[in-house]
Structure formats: C-alpha cells, structure tokens
Amino acid sequence: MRQITIPISDEVIRSLNVGDPVSLNGIMVTGRDAVHKWLVETFIYKTRPPQGDDLEVYEALKPLLNGGVIYHCGPVVAGLDTKEYRFVAAGPTTSSREEPYQGDVMRHFNLKGVVGKGGMGAKTLQACQEVPGVYFHAIGGAASWIAQSVQRVLGVYKLEFGVPEALWVIEVKDFPAVVTMDAHGQSQHAVIEAHSKQVLEQLIG
Image (tube, rainbow, N blue to C red):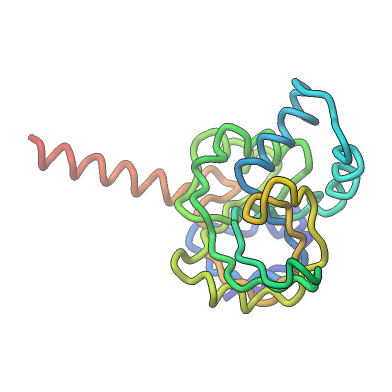
C-alpha cells in the first residue's frame, strides 16, 4: 500500500494508476452537496453574492484545498456541545451527486484528490487529466473503522449547513483508499459500467 502525503504534488498524482491501493496522510476537508453547490454558485460561477462569513471561509479554504483532498463524507460527530469534536463515524457518501460541480471545484482550487464511493463521471475524469487529480474510492460500510484514521478535528466551517453537510477540517493517518480514476483518463467505474451494460444487453437479447 502506497503512502501518500497531503498536499499531493503533480508528480505523485501522475505516478498513480487505477487499481493502486493507497494510505492517505495529512489534512483533508469534508464536503458534500451543500458545500459544492455553495462553492460553485458563490465563487466559481458567481451567481449569488457572498453572504455572512463566506469570503472569510473561502480564504481559509484556499490553502487547504490547493494540492489538497476533499472527502465526500457526512460524519457522525461527538462533542458538538463542548466543541471538542471527535469523529464517531466517517464513511464515504455516494460521489455521483457532486458530478455537476466537482470538475469546476478541482480546477478552481487546484484540488488533487477526491475521496468518496461509487466513482464519478466524464466531467470529473476530464478534470482529473487537466488539473491533474485522482479519485480515491473509500470503503463503503466501514464508517466507524475509517473514523479511527481521523487523528484530530482541526476545525469546522459552515456548520449552519448541518453536521453532515459542513466543511470539517480533519487530520488523517493511514486512511485506506484505492485509486479508481486517474490522471491518465482511466476510470474503473466506466469499465464496470460498460461491462454491466454489455451483460444486461446479453440477458435482454
């Protein structure tokens, strides 16, 4: 299993291929539907003006996401009343919901890695080649086990989105994942989808 340190260099990204098992170490940020929509509308397409602490949060996120990793995760978090946050469960959520936004977010922030489950589509794969970046597939159904790799919760932004949808800044050690979309245009998900379609057509025919 290859040890990968975040932030990740272009050289390391280009050396990764579909099927490579990796162990991620460093700081990553969680973000799901609300976060991606907010980032794209406020800072990339600028279809809504910044409100409240939007600009402050954006400036704080830029260095974290530059060369960084975003994790599609709606965590279960303990210590909300004391602000001594601890991840109880940290399983990946389905990534396909972020497909309309992910490529633009990767390009805008120089985001090198996206972690989730189920893979993503052509727009994200294109961005992986351009930025460059990769998609890391995390293990579904192992939320409490993955949470053990979260060493510390360093902070949280946009808690008003709700605990699962907020931007949690976490430090991870030995976070297990597999590269399933790489910077060379390869996607394990596209291969499986094409094969499944072929099998289905044979069954119907």
